[in-house]
Each structure stands twice: as structure tokens, then as C-alpha cells.
Image 1: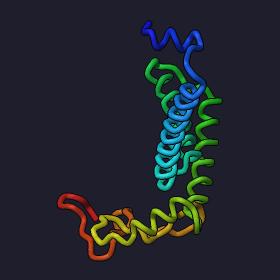
Image 2: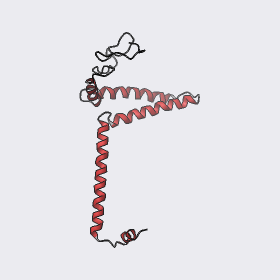
Image 3: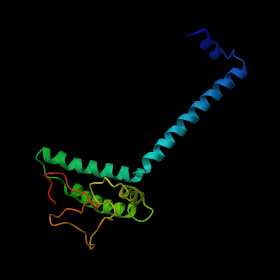
Image 4: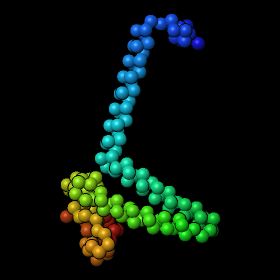
Length: 154
């Protein structure tokens, strides 16, 4: 232990030295917290944290089904029931996020302005009972003036 660290433990430093150290530490903490919050806000502008967490949970439940199947076991009914609940909940979340003002709607509108898109992002998602525009191959339409890559049908 250095002499300075020993002096710190004994309380041999003037109060100003402790205040300066405290000020530096608070400044560093504030700077790092601001950086963290800005990063979170930037990330959530694409996918809200609640959506990311739910889809992670849904993916985890999905992986659990494979865990049983890899061992040759039947997936328990209660896991399959939870997958059904997650399926309906994801549909509800997507429908909500694609409404006017929702995070995905804002991103979709922004994406629709890109003339180099391969896909048509001007259309909204379709849900049960709604008609979806598809081509003769059952695929969604391309952006206006766009062509599918060679070898792709549609």
C-alpha cells in the first residue's frame, strides 16, 4: 500500500482533498450514466425494451421445446400452452407497435422513404380477418420499381 493510500486510511488528508476526489468521482459517474442513458434511448428508438425482453422470453420458451425434442421427449402441454400464449401476445404487441405513433410504425415510415428497399414498407401488417396483398407466389409485393434478386421467385 502506498503512503498516499495509508494516509487516506488514517484521515491525514485535508478535507479539501476528499471533496476534490468526491467531485471527480461524481463527475465521472454522471458522465458514464449520461452515456448509458443516451445509448439506451438510441437503442429503444428502434425496438422498445419491453418488446425486446418479451421476444427474448418467447425465444427462450421456444428453445425449451427443442430441449425436450432433442432428448426424444414429448414437450409438456404446459410449455406448448405458453407458446400459444406468447404467440397471441406477440401479435398484440406487434399490432400495438405498428399503430400510428408506435415505435415500429415510425421506423416503417422512415424505411419506406428509401428508394433502394427490396421490399414494400409502405404497407401495414395484416392480422386475422384482414386481407393481405400478395403476388401469385404468396409473397408480399416489392417496393415500386424494385426487382427480386435473380433466382428468387415472384
